[in-house]
Length: 547
Image 1 (tube, rainbow, N blue to C red):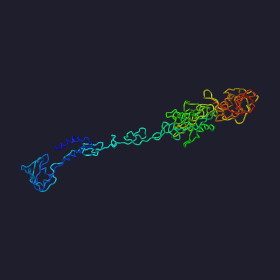
Image 2: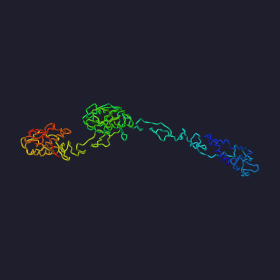
Image 3: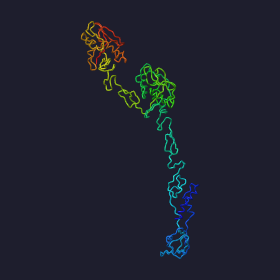
Image 4: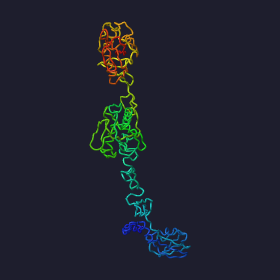
């Protein structure tokens, strides 16, 4: 035990002497020590043998020879004391180091040793000097060795190979060793979806909705200079400016304009990169091009716009439409003459646009729609979508006829029958003084008609046929006064803002207002001329009623 303690105390000192060899370990020291301090063995022959006890530590003699006790006859020390195992007698007691003894054997025994090999403590750990966790004090390898092949301080088993470029699509923030990085084309996301400025779907992306699911692209170049067209003509429906209306505006223009060399037709006829569904942008769509892919944008003039103004499909009035400049100083919202030539840059839509009616005033307004398709349906003038009258409006069909006059309350007025009485009629009673029937103002026609029939027994005449008329479920029709008749001409006849929506003939029409015993007032519906003519003249009749 003292020898072992000595060795253990010696180990650190011995190892310090190997400090220039980083791979030197206690395991090597132990092997070296065992090699330099082998166990002492003794060969005994049958008969008498002499031996010296070589161990430093005394040992009970019976224990010392326990492994070969069947061959031992007698052991004697120098004092004459004996050990006789056959009789179980031990007169010697202990073997002492350095003392000599005699032994008589029955048979030969080779390689007998009194002292055991040096006993080392077992210290587990990594014993491979190449490992990053090499333990020079370990003498038993426990399989825990780790290695750092690239010397970066991270063991191989914990190394993560991946892209370390934060700008790459496959960037791995946990990567410890550089791996392959992948990148996308300019103006695209890593999932392949485009951003503003991307070359995509036949053009250059200039608009994406907030979901990124649909957008608009501009053609890669202007397709020429064209007039907007339809000068002095108001195109019904082409006045929308919002995103999603460009296609409908374009179709509205083409439906009305007969010109063949105008911006809208050129846009619809355009084909590029396999796409033929191009159209003229609305003003807001045009302006998004300006702010996102022209000189005014953060990414510069990637649309390669020229120093000229471009047409939108949004109409201003009969003579002007909206346009915008793209390069240099210019107007944000130009109102240019329709007959002037402007640049045309067609656009097209991509993605899951929802087609439908986008007008909130329409009966079939579709809140989810973001692309107008011309499907809007509106109630008739003065009606709601359920067919209820919301207000009386001149020109609407109501109360059995066509409204041509509404008083200041909006609740009362006059309607004209939708057609003339069949044939022509005299006013009647030529030369007879009809009592009354001489009022001309609006509101006097009914009394005039009653006065005529009461004072003139001739039939059929204009007044009698008017009172006998039935239409639309009403039988209270009468002959209009002079100014009631003139009001008809000015509102629903040729003199009206909507034209001759009452479908009047270019002929004379009788009023119920008399002039003299021989004549009465009429209105010419070709030009609105009013004067008196002979009561015997045969003229046309359009009856009215009040509501």
